[in-house]
Length: 332
Image (tube, rainbow, N blue to C red; front, side):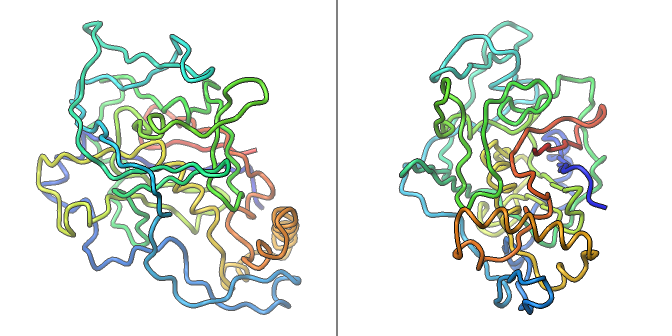
């Protein structure tokens, strides 16, 4: 039976990274195929109750959407004892109704971080924008370590999920339709008014302490884990040296990867593995999703998001237990 739509993110803290660098590779070799979807096999219409799945061949290495926006200098040297650039509760209003999250500091002073160019860009056109992360990619064949193998001690410092991703404290004003053909998360900037998420918010670390590897698992989709790892090309195709200044996974990375995965077309074998009752439910979700967009969307076939049975709105992430390894994503 398909249950409530939940997603689990297994994350590894920055504390465990440097120790692991001396013994294991944080990234796959440059020979890994950087693909963002399964093989798309042909399927007969009769096998899916009249619903066409996308036909095609093996997926090829793909790139993120091209953006004409400027590159920005982003902070990503984070001392082990430095505070996050955000932390609930909100303190002062900023950006049209949004809030500035004051960084807590034992000394009462803000920490200043060094900056370094990083090729992340955003563009805004006709009410939409594209987020182009360059440092991280979805590894289809990861060698993911034990999620409990981390140097982070739960009681050593507070653990936070970024307010835009936080589903526990209801601090987020994000609206994000995971089934939309365009990647377009927005935030409320006043009653009835919505705007793109500011670049500086997308560039914040997704969690604090910041993490460098994420595993995203969906209860609806246990067969399709998403492992986010550092792109080998970031270090010229080689391995990062011990002590290398590695950027953390950011809010924009998490939002993009979730949407990208949910918009992946399923295959003939995927469909055949569903029990008949679940096929009917997914068929109805598929029909409801494509109808507003017409045949162009219908021809793309059933996607992973259809397995959530119409629960397509992102409702934040919550921590599971006392550890730092698991976050649960809620949809409605």
